[in-house]
Length: 205
Image 1 (cartoon, helix red, strand yellow):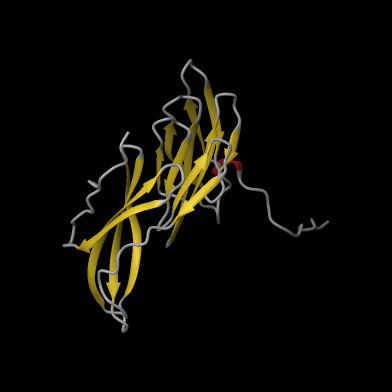
Image 2 (spheres, rainbow, N blue to C red):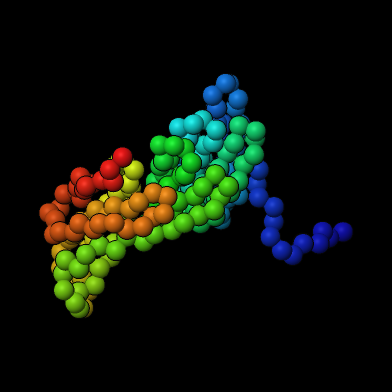
């Protein structure tokens, strides 16, 4: 007798599905299962962040694939409800002080989710430190809160039309919350290892 091989994707190996436990105030613990593996590479827990109000948490899982990395964030509630957030391939997470919004930063995009999973996005646009026809490759290097505003740090590599590296610049962009409206951009040529300052004027309380 010969066994017939079924067409289509095979179910994931349960041993490769990671999980994390989130502890909420009051002693409630919720077990959060992670995403399915990609090409037999599991998604491991990378960050768990409880909201300031304690009524929600973010659990970030990341796949460690050769030459490629991807992450996914789950919004967790004390009731045990778990929601996969849309467009959540981010490397940094930050709650707003009131716990109403979760902020995430990918390679070059900022995302802001509310507590029902709706998302806003913004792409920092650094100043033209080098003139055309130089081209820029940007990545987000940091997030921080300043008063009621969000400061996003970016690092920018500049290249000539022939592909040679021309220089490096750093930028700090200030956004209002929760609209993600850009208020101010500070960009300048930087030495290797220098970080963009986020000491920008903030919204008055």
